[in-house]
Image 1 (cartoon, rainbow, N blue to C red):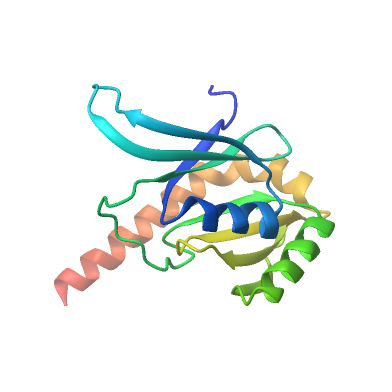
Image 2: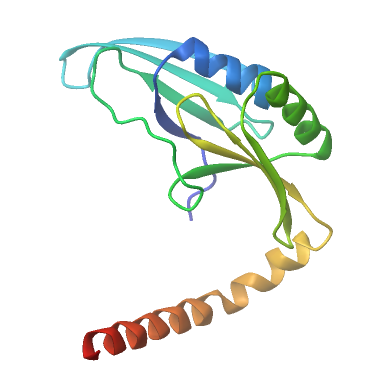
Amino acid sequence: MTERLHHMAFRCRDSEETRIFYEEVIGLPLAAAMPIEASATGRAVRVMHTFFQLKDGSYVAFFEVPGAPFEFKAQHDFDLHMALEADAEDVERATAAARARGIEVRGPSEHGFIRSTYFRDPNGYVVELALKTPIHDSFDAEAPKAAHAILAAWRARNAELAAATEGA
């Protein structure tokens, strides 16, 4: 099995604007900034690759590619978001910092095993700070036991609905 996440990488409009959000609002320190001047195939490029470190040593990373087309748009939570585990102090600090800057904050939302607060970064991505609740450990232990059966029931129900729609 793969050991753990090293980094997730996303495009960004502006590396400094992104740094301000992730470092000063979310609280992830800028760990590396790597200008890239050639692709793996040797093609000349102008790219800034930045890495923001989480407490476990993993990273959230970004690529700024000036002048290259990319559709930045506000994402719906169900379409694309990153969820970062945080403690209550992290969430309170990030919420205060975001609100002071006029950044969108939603939540907290109760999901049973986590309590989530959502922020929108300057690129349109949704960032969720997830605070574990007291039942999180039992969720970790029990959810895998039923996951395959729940997914199979979901697929069967969707097939039934699709068949009913086709027949209508």
